[in-house]
Length: 128
Image (cartoon, rainbow, N blue to C red):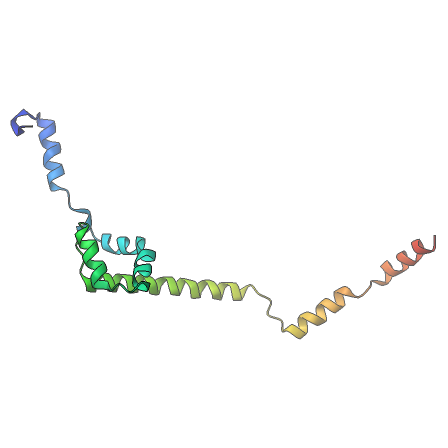
């Protein structure tokens, strides 16, 4: 379609489309991309691939990323996941009883001792 065939509104829309930034050049896009691809990157590294192979593959797909950037973002994301996991395990520890195993055993023995009233009621009904 020829530019002269566009209405003023269509020309304004076309200019706006021409001014849009590539998604890869938006701030934070590469970090988000690496976070989304984290498990696949981990799997590729486990298979023996190196960061330069992975960066080259991503660049060939249309998103330019250097080996150093990929490695840095992936390492940072992995570290943040590990920190979250440690934080979660500390939270779980904090809700567990603080008593020592001996104290827990003593408490359970007290709970399991027969109640005198219940014993009397049991004897009463057993004799009938």
